[in-house]
Amino acid sequence: LYALDAGALDPQQPHRQDEVYFVVSGRASITVGTETTQVGRGSVVYVPAGVAHKFHHITEDLRVKVVFSPPEG
Image (cartoon, rainbow, N blue to C red; front, top):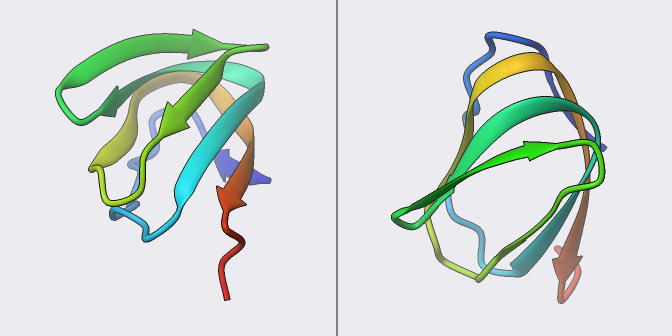
């Protein structure tokens, strides 16, 4: 579970694995590469391996389930 409070900065760097985010609660924007989308509860976002991505403009505490493929480690 990835948690960012309202107004927080997302420190993420690109990962070596593909990722899928499922927004459990909260509201924010996410930029993946050059594309920006608003997300809220129930949103699903795919991030390919190696692509820059960040949540931003977090207006409600954000709670996100993250799946890496293949698993880290």
